Image (cartoon, rainbow over all chains, first blue to last red; front, side, top):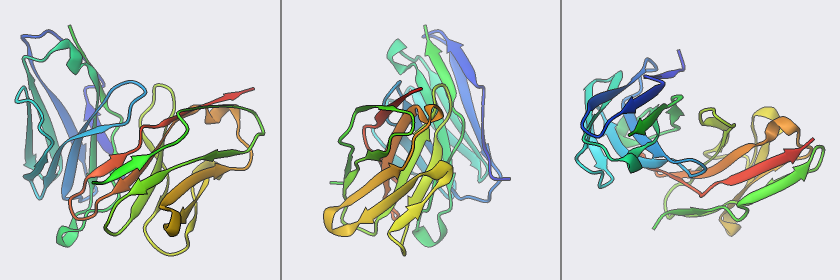
Length: 115
Length: 113
């Protein structure tokens, strides 16, 4: 299985809602990532998890809260988002043996719209 | 600081024309380079990658890229484009000790039938 899966594919939420994005991989990868991508722009790194521990937070606002319950799953909890947070949210995973990170495999993304 | 620069923001070609998209990087460590493609409404797909070895790398769909260390470049080429190559193309460099993947700003390729 060389796939990274993400659910839901689409999400519409109000500014007072709480929702979660989910990501799963079964490639045995020990690093997982969240990216945000606006239209016609490159993905921007948000968070990196390595061996279920948060290793990088790219100064992301606290209304985005990541969680890595186990080595195959990555969640992104959303609360009190703003309309400008509307974007495609991409999850990725990679090997991370002995502290060396390798090629990232991307999921199809969740298209988020905040009203 | 690590950075990736893509010179062409928007390229328009006719079918069967040759393609070369420029990519320059600035990174002090071991270089791992990638080209990704994103077709309209679809997710990011890996076209090709360079980690070490032969600097001429062949990828999917007839694409290739050449790593020129002295020029800090990793340009993407295709001898003859098709309408189906219309997409957004991203060059990226990986920091292998942090996992950070740094993308260029992207090039929009439009191929006219």
